[in-house]
Amino acid sequence: MATSHLPAGTRFSSDVPPRLDRLSWSPWHTKLVIALGITWMLDGLEVTLVGSVAAVLAERDTLGLSASEIGAAGTLYLAGAILGALVFGRLTDRFGRRRLFLVTLGLYVGATLLTAVSWSFASFAVFRALTGAGIGGEYSAVNSAIDELIPARLRGRIDLAVNGTFWLGAALGACMALWLLGARWMPHPLAWRSVFLLGAVLGTAVLFLRRHVPESPRWLLLHGRVDEADQVMSTIEKDVGKSLHRAAAPQAAPSPVELEATGSIKFLAIARVLLRKHARRTCLGLALMVAQAFAYNGVFFTYALVLGRLYGVPSARVAAYLLPFSIANLLGPWLLGGLFDVIGRRVMIAATYTISGLFIAVTGFAMFRGWLDATSQTLLWCGVFFVASAAASSAYLTVSELFPVEMRGMAIALFYAAGTALGGMGAPILFGVLLDRGDQTGLLEVYLLGAALMVLAGVLAAVLGVSAERRSLEELVDLEA
Image 1 (cartoon, rainbow, N blue to C red):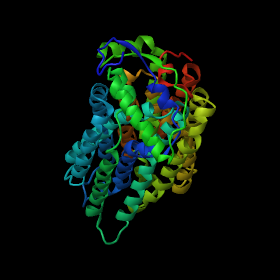
Image 2 (cartoon, rainbow, N blue to C red):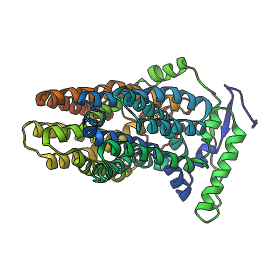
Image 3 (cartoon, rainbow, N blue to C red):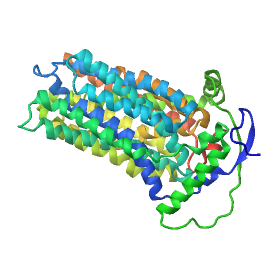
Image 4 (cartoon, rainbow, N blue to C red):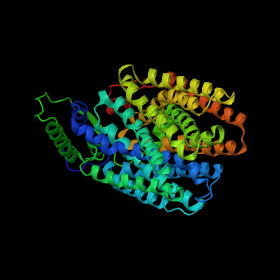
């Protein structure tokens, strides 16, 4: 019997999940992905802007930051993202995916505007932390909603493509920095502020793209709002039909699935799922997140400083090297993503992590031996991170699809927080300190550590991975392999 709001613990059946999974891909889905997935683009924009202007921020007529301070600002951005993910991750499971969109995006826009008027290291670091909180908060709601609205047969490639748009933002940020920092008509003290101002303008425009994004029907079902979930599902089906310019073809009613209204679950129940019921998945997700966070944050947050300190690249030209790096990272998930649905999660995750780890070690050794210049270093990183970008995106796919709907937002937040804290926060500071000291031996050792973590994660993926390709989220809850 369908009611407007079933109490927690009530079991019922619904055909909404299979109806979502059997939908044809349509312009409606494309608009959904753009409206939600743009979060990753904004994160890429933010990270690249700081990387591109890092050398400028070290100039005396700007903020006069040291390499260690720039690395520390990167770490505080990540700390803010961790806190934002944990707070808003809990809220998105409790109050819904849709309600959090405007709050987190508004926080991002406001903090980015404040970054543009920073006057010291302390103010710059605080505003970067607030910006990170907005982005971190977006991750849980956005990744949860995308997984819950995308048909199962396409979930892998779409997730990777969406996560890969981080690098579309990175490319955009590099172009913005290259244009503004290289402009003769705009002095550096004003140019770096304009870079962040444009980022806030872009974030504001995103607000208008989310007006028609629906609440996740799966979230509604798990909170006992069965009638509302069915109404939202019917609206989605009508919108998909309209976007395809044809009525949906008559189809046999799908077999309903058995569900239980859970409502908002407590932290003890979340811990029980993570540490007892799905301990293997927890170990896998943590390994994937830590490895990619260390490798990426270590290399990318300080690459502008590497170009300047080791290869003498002028600050105004740094973005020209970050642009091809960003494009290679963008193409990796877009071109390899389909294989995660066709060949399978376990094989592709293990392969991309292991291969990229080995290539990071080779590239780091070549840099240490002095065999590279700025151009060859960038070309090698492009090849390495073409593969590593798909690997990193698959980490987010893994932690977002392998845990129950009622705790998906919090699961994403916890893994993001743990991975970033253990693998990402220390890496920018460590790399920055080594660059300040001119210690290339230490730099090589850190690169090798990142490579080892990636290879270890690849091995664990081969052993603990779940064959989640083309399976519904409901089916994955109790699937062991």
